[in-house]
Image (tube, rainbow over all chains, first blue to last red):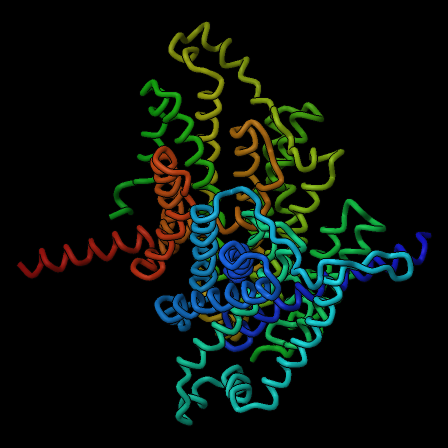
Length: 294
Length: 326
């Protein structure tokens, strides 16, 4: 039996990974919940967020506070890109079959990954931790960087903020209404097209934000997009497509299964998450906390 | 039109003369196209005819490739056994996975096929002892063509080709047979029922059809033919690798099917030809093939959703109308 500090460190690293995943997957889940489209390109938004953060840090320098501006700038840039794509192309596929929507988002994956290669090359990029959070501390024999602690706090904060917007504001009410019944909402005089575009932009923003925030922990490389999209799919499927707290729960489960899977069955830890995904789809296709689609 | 002229048979016949053109490169490309054509057509049985969008069809391609590869390289069985085994193994996996998949609809169906394919990929990727793991399994032997050379001593025009060209001929014969079978399946009452299910599953259920069982049968058949294509591809590729089963492979074959046109039997085969030929043309100019492919795909989705076959049929109709009008 491994000692306590090791288990502690392992579960904490699983938690940190879960918070990143939640951030990214919540955007995917939001887009699915409202637009009913599974967006393969969400991983690409994540990747662009990471490259964007790198680029902004290059421009802004590494003074105090600069990192946060870079993160915000990258996430906003990704949101704008998402809005443009939605407005010019994606919008015209909503009434088409799923196959066309899926393949369109896959086309975006191909285009954006090559665009990133053209802009930033294939060398891996890295961003150093922001000056205020560069250190680390010891707890129960485990070394915990301050930055990870910040991510651990940020995840639940964003979850709560998100929940508040969805359930306590007019915009949130409209978003929830659009998820339930688009036609009725349009008949009530709401500009559904604009709402969809806004939702797509918020979703892209979350993906980009996740990518930008992950840069001090992971290096930025081509291929991070397709790696992430599979993980985000697993998370939203486990929690329930379109379910907000489900995504949170899914991310927590995924993080722990992965970090303890590496501990106990090192070779088949990837295998275990896919089995979990398949099992959820077989037993409860709409996920642990989701609702069946009508 | 196509009823009077057997286009499929004519193209197959023409394909036999590719090695005689003397270019090893064209033979290589033709071999690639023929195998992918079978893979894409097997997927079309599911997506085009039955209306089930599978995002994990590469799983069965991979299972077939590994089955033939392992049996020929590690066990040393002849191709005559290892090739049908690819179909059987893929069918077994398709039966197991399909049993669960056909219970779901639309996006959930697509997600579950994806999950199962990733499971297959993860096994291939990690099970080093059997599959060679991340490194894959290089140097799959060619089938034994010794007997051809013995025939060649009697009939001089048989013995003039290379092993890779013999394998190409063998591929043509086997894929031709698979196409004939698939065509029979699609044209049979069973095939018609699949189309009925695609158009209106509720009504099919109403008239007493066990929709799930039909869908499962289509799933297993599609998996079997994908497995056979995989078995051939492993040998052609001189090795099998885990990315055969990765989800981007499933996307690739879906693109081929869509590019050719899902509405026509030979559409996906045309798509395979168009995509692979285009790929060969473009990679000599630029390394950004995915970018080009993405742009092609976007144009396809917005301008020609019926693919090459759909666009050609529409052009024919327009020509016909104009001819009658004049």
